[in-house]
Image (cartoon, rainbow, N blue to C red; front, top):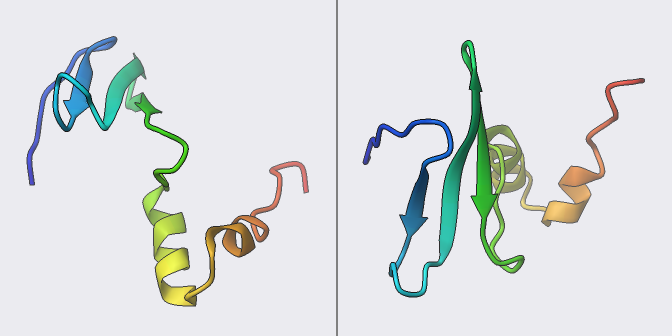
Length: 74
């Protein structure tokens, strides 16, 4: 595992720097919360760990798992 220290607004380039596969940016830091922005082509799936685990264990496609997430208002 690679661990990199970044400040707010700084980025990490994934892949070839001349033609990056994607970019990860530290959007904001407020207290113990960090907002991370991912800039990848739409064809590359990016999931939170808990969603990725659901997809892996269910053997279903992404859309069926996403359909199970309910809005916070319910």
